[in-house]
Length: 183
Image (cartoon, rainbow, N blue to C red; front, side):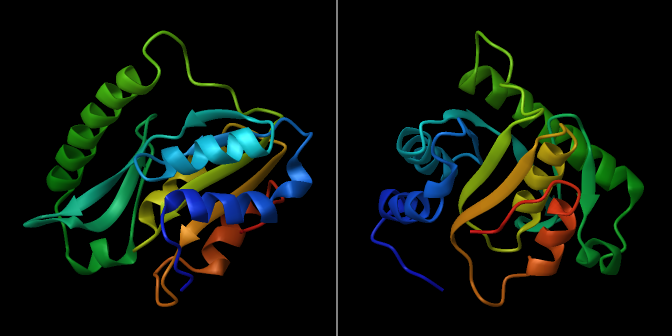
């Protein structure tokens, strides 16, 4: 696991690794909250445009910090394999998805109150997050972006533990239809 003094240092390092995309006017989609300051740095250094990609972790009953899946703004959600092990009821999952979609609607209103999200179709898109734990939200963000038909999707993450549940194989599977790279 790489360690940085702060998110801005991590973003500067990512900007160096992504320098080949300068001049392509990439769309930087930051995963709030930690990805937002990093996204601002990347957009500035790569002469790109920044917006947010909003996804929310679906929390386990009694332990909302433990991700059992994630949902995007459209309501599309996916569960982790652990969710099946927990034998969660469809009613619990439906209620958790609805609760997290309410949060996403409020956040969209806060982040972009006077405009629609920036369209990713046909663009080079860099999805940035400050770090991953289970990877559920990053994977949901990548899947959400992929459905909007970008030219290329790149996952850029500040830190990820080597034992993170998000694997290179999962990221590659998500990016397969829209070639990209994991930085």
